[in-house]
Amino acid sequence: MSKTNPRFMALFLELFESLPRQGPGSRACAERALRLCRELPPVPRILDLGCGTGAQTLYLAELTAGSILAIDSHAPSIERLRQTLAERGLSRRAKAQVGDMAQLELPTASFDLIWSEGALYNIGIEMALPICLELLRPGGYLAFTDAVWRRENPPEEVRAAFEQEGVTLGWAAEVAAAITQGGFELLDHFTLPDAAWWDDFYTPMLARIEAMRHQYANDREALTILDEIAKEPEMHRHYANYYGYEFFVARRR
Ligand code: SAH
Image (cartoon, rainbow, N blue to C red; front, side, top):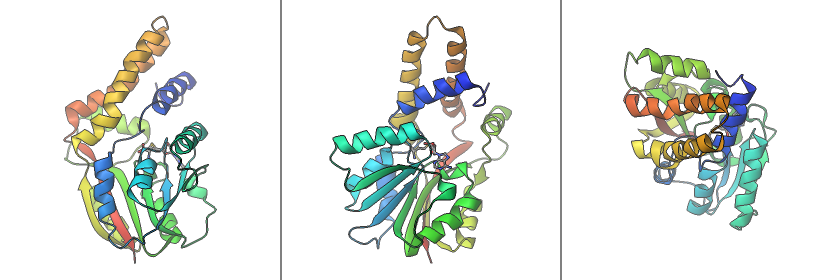
């Protein structure tokens, strides 16, 4: 069963849209990455690619005085982020827009910082890096997270799970090399700690799955799908030492 099954996709989205975030990450990690962008202007122009419902968009709004354009291809997530921004009085400083990061129609060299948590892999780093390079002014920063292997010879279960998702994992050193070859200076990179997987992502995900199991108690197909989705956090519980998320912070030369 996978994302090609419409019922799977419907339940997956119902679950994911309700979570505080749609991938691993935390405010502490965002702060750490942002601190590496030492020479940001006082009011940076920021682009958040694959923002989802905007957990990190809100952190960026709190941690900087900048203007933020947050883009995601999934319209319901953008709608939810718009509502949150309005509720928090941030609609002037942060805009949420539906868009495809592979086909952005934005002026070149117009951002001081491009941020992307757990999203560039959707179009692939090789495609994403030149897009970001062009949108950043010289000296502008790129901060993004990407899933990477941490240990050789992962169990078949882990390899198969990524394959099924259509995700090809590399190694941090490979991503680092691509960044450097892509016209960036790599400032630093660090591995997301376990808390960044659990606190705002897998713990709320498992709680929500439990709630949905009650909601769909008489729906056999839904229950099977929920079991399937619950495998991801379980896999991470067992095999977190084989793969992780790496935060990369680079600067356009
Ligand atoms: N950054 C958020 C969401 C990560 S999930 C967080 O960390 O919580 C990845 C997001 O990328 C999803 O919201 C998905 O809709 C979005 N996405 C996938 N392909 C995309 C594309 N081509 N252009 C823009 N967004 C895309």
